[in-house]
Image 1 (tube, rainbow, N blue to C red):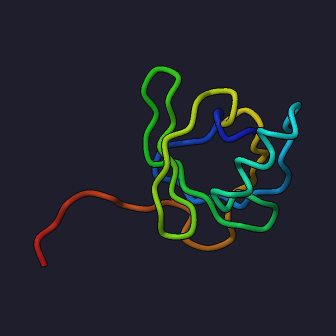
Image 2: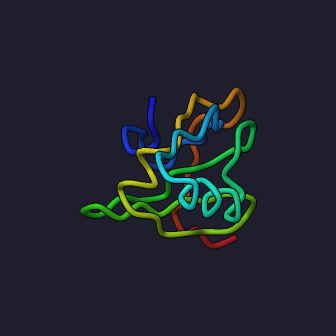
Length: 86
């Protein structure tokens, strides 16, 4: 499944990057998006996707989200990002 089809607040594992343009692939690699890496879809509004990769949040467009093929991560399949006082 592609990242743009993923569920919000769910942890996935990147299986492949299917970018038509080499520049798109290189950009995703600079963000840390490469096969084997965990990625979480934090939110989606219109054609913007907020993702969490390697403890950093990024905003990517629909074309980039469509280039990231994912599968459900083996651990922590759903996360809770709500604000809670500790």
